[in-house]
Amino acid sequence: MTRTVEHDFVGSPTSGGGTGRGRARTWSGRVLALLIVAVIFGKVLPGLVDLERVAEILRTRVSALELVLLSALTVLSVLASAAALSAALPGLKIASASVINVVTTALSYALPGGGAAGVAGPPGRR
Image (cartoon, rainbow, N blue to C red; front, side, top):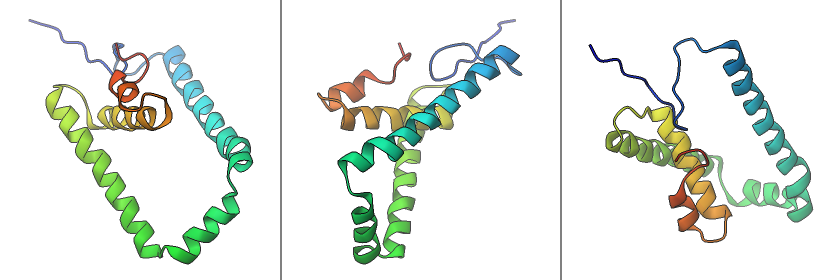
């Protein structure tokens, strides 16, 4: 009888229940990610962009229906790409494929080299 080991998107084996230490690492990583996002939106972006002006433009030039439609199409796009990744890589779950899709897209937009950075993939993928 052959035993198979599932892997998450960073390539480390996953266990059914996980260990206390593994769960603590997961939660500390999530908290760190939220803190980074809070710093970016609370400190960095306000120094670069007038967020009140952006909000005013969104309120006056974009209808609520357009914002809802854009959001729905964005989610649909991420899920469609994730489904393609899952189909191409057996065993890859939609949630992990969605994370890979979002991270590589962000890398291609944010880093010099654009698409080359996105193709390289998220850290720890190799």
